[in-house]
Length: 254
Image (cartoon, rainbow, N blue to C red; front, side, top):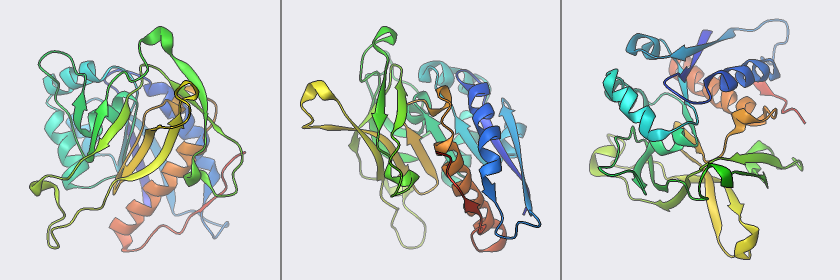
């Protein structure tokens, strides 16, 4: 399969933190034939259209989504990002502000709204839990990390958004040919103790090639989500290049 280039959008936010965890996660993915490996990772910062075009997958990090949107627009990156996500269908992961950027709709935006990349048929509510000083860490159960996993993931929430509604895809967003689009899959929820556990906030979702989390895995030392996501990247790249998944093995760290 050769080199797999994974970019982190480097306009603002937790760029180096994501790259650090990606570098730590990569060794946990191996070929079934341990005597050789037919892929190699290259992790880069992305600030230009040419750098984006070189990527097989992309992370949009946490930060401030309005600032990211403005900078991306000034650099002429918004349309290339939309093409990367919606037309080319390459794997993309957004954390916190990145989730906002990847939503089709956003509530509680600043006056005049903001440009979004889209790709997830959801409406997000920005700053669900308040201001910076109301940031918190919470144990999350994330079944996609493995049915036998009993170690909670420590989710860091900083001015975090949540998915307040899963919306119907627009006519132009459906998959060509069959007129259908894969539904949004809820990957993780947070049950706020003070609310009596009656309502679960959706804090992780996936739809086809797009994955989003409300919290900041890059601000922890826990690499499990980065390992899991790199596996999704390799499967997607293998499908595109060879017509089948990469066939890699993953041993999630404990």
